Amino acid sequence: MLKIILPTIMLLPTTLLSPQKFLWVNTTTHSILIATLSLQWLLPSYYPHKNPTQWTGIDQISSPLLVLCCWLLPLMILASQNHLQHEPPTRKRIFISTLITIQPFLILAFSATELTLFYISFEATLIPTLILITRWGNQPERLSAGIYLLFYTLISSLPLLIVILHLHAQIGTLHLTMLGLTPPTLNNSWTGLLSSLALLTAFMVKAPLYGLHLWLPKAHVEAPIAGSMLLAALLLKLGSYGIMRITLLTGPISDHLHYPFLTLALWGALMTGSICLRQTDLKSLIAYSSVSHMGLVIAASMIQTHWAFSGAMILMISHGLTSSMLFCLANTNYERTHTRILLLTRGLQPLLPLMATWWLLANLSNMALPPTTNLMAELTIMIALFNWSSLTILLTGAATLLTATYTLFMLLTTQRGTLPTYITSLQNSNTREHLLMTLHIIPMLLLILKPSLISGILS
Image 1 (cartoon, rainbow, N blue to C red):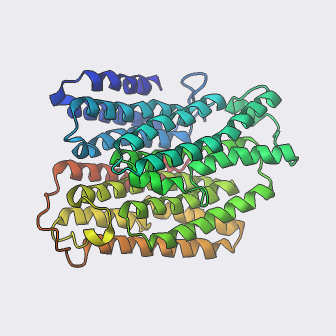
Image 2: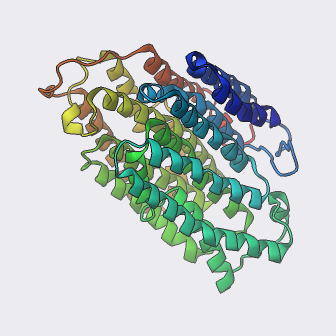
Image 3: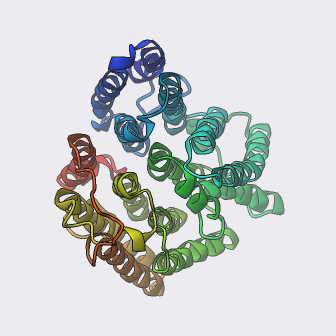
């Protein structure tokens, strides 16, 4: 554990002390080395918890997320190079430092075996994200997006803190392994119900559940590319990871809490799919598609069966890579045309043929075409939900249909059609962008060969 956290922290002095000429090279290579080193976490171990220290532990649920977390740091640094081109060196250093600061917090949040530490790191990721959005966003609306993000997260996480303290007062420990051994304390009394509700709501806002998702499209649209990748690939996963961890430990949830959340999640997947069909803004469309995918994850982690959990895990990882890749592609379009409106970025296939290939691959994996892990995940979740109640097939089926429709709509509008008259010349796509897309797609294609690595089941 420390052999990942310490190099990650040492990335800060690397960033601040590197000479101007080697700033990008040093930070990228260093973070790629860390990412390669983190792959060892994927190896299944005989012990359920690999406990590096007393408060952190890695098991099959957290290891894929930790690896994803380390994997995305070099990609975020790679993706940000172009839009920081004209910034003064000090600002570049501050930007990269902000990205690096989030990393230890995320690693701690995903590997914490103690609820207080989990809460602290869960909240601490908010500060660098806020700095990214409100300082490096593209438009003046970024301030309102930042305020939305801040208040949604804070209002939902205060009850979580109170419940954590309440649990500590009742049980006397907040260690996850100890919580698993004690008989469930949150019973069907009013206190138990409200405590479970508070525990869930904090993570539902982060995940986000339809109805509590209003901060997400705003934050995504205003964030710089690294902020978008971070939000889509990692911060949303914090919410669903919290749901999976906490619900397992505090005993079975009562039906009064089950049904509203399940209904909202599945209905939200349908609704956000239909919202996507009416979007004019490319980044907003991808953000809403994230909400619809995470709706499936929430629904799966609410019914708490083995199938559902492994489906949710696979979907979390594959969605992290897919949506991050889509945001990178949207950003390459934005850097060339300086607009995110779909009607103004039509017909780019003849101009950027290689980028069109990446668009096709990313969109096909977004709508869960075989042989992607997205398909395996969605099928697993749908089977688990169908087994729980056969009526859910109507909602999940419609959601899948809508996903395919808006994904094809996005592909056709950006790549096909007549070229807008104002586009006379475009900068070519460069090696850095191709490398970025390759590093997104390779893990997705390799993971289908051995999905048990990310399915949360001990292989």
